[in-house]
Image (cartoon, rainbow, N blue to C red):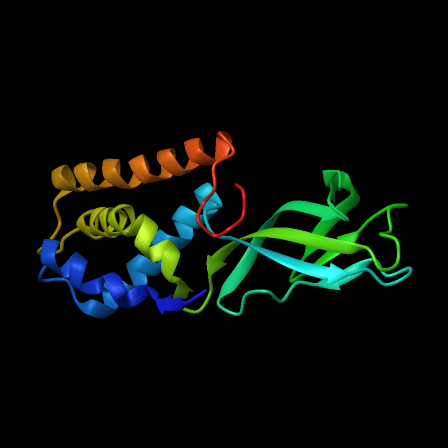
Length: 184
């Protein structure tokens, strides 16, 4: 997976709003990407471990550029683990209660991520670029008392952003893939 900076879309936003300073665009784009990921769980990655006897906590370190916001699914030797048998604790998974994976079992954790350092996967930018740019433009147009403020036009861009959110949520609800190689 190639990681790219979230600032790759700055020039696209400048085409719509040429007076906005680049640093402001970059800040807003980071917030829009985070919002999109939180709403849709579109950025998912797997992290796998081999179980160790009597160990209940495993560090999740798959992504260096993403912050884990939730665990989507856990499997042990291909069998899905019920939700109440584990929890996310910062950057680790903790198995709870009487559930402890057997030694040498394969644990696969599917995580939902948000960018934490201004970077995200290139496939993510490629797939959602149009919607992310619209979200950023809408957000900037909603800023009060700026030369680029335009509440009316912001609704058009906001609608396009939420169209992307809706399409991704629909795809996930139908069991579609989100291009990360992980079934949503």
